Image (cartoon, rainbow over all chains, first blue to last red; front, side):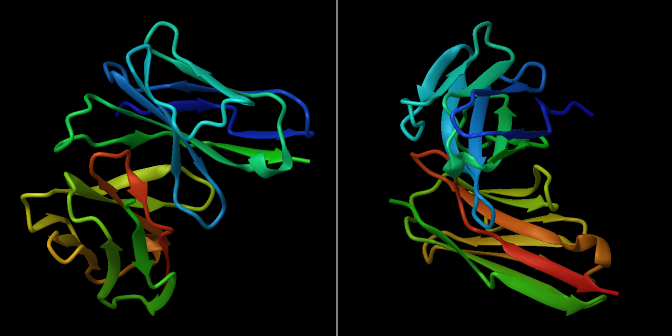
Length: 116
Length: 110
């Protein structure tokens, strides 16, 4: 069964350092999402791509976060510089379409970031 | 702004018991509602998706209902098993990205 791949699974970094996360969606899925999940909370959307274009990045802290999906397939989320409050699980998800009534999102295993 | 609330926050039941998890949302103008399962330190697994025109969906021992007008959904788990222990999240899709509740942490005791 096809799955969303993410790496690394765990990342420990010191504040002010740069970190990057990678996501490979399910083949053929045009829509890709990055979420941040703080412990004990539900995931919150950071950015949504349709192919290589950003559809929604309204909740992305653009002063330190950036995301790209250059060829419309895999994607990278970067944080520079990392802050203590960035410690969270970063989840990637993909869906075949953005059809609102049938859109099921499939999630990857996540990257657990700890900022010291 | 859509808000999703899940009650209870945590639940512990003996194996074999039937149980109900609750989800409420403030804006009834939704396209669909989805229930997910999350194991500790892992990603989310989709369990059931209910479209706004539907009243319920079933998969094995799971049954999810949706009452859009009252802004409520329930997830019914029959004959619970220790393997059902996880956090269950509901999420609603409207004209905004998916909005998640904080989840219900379920423990099924053998």
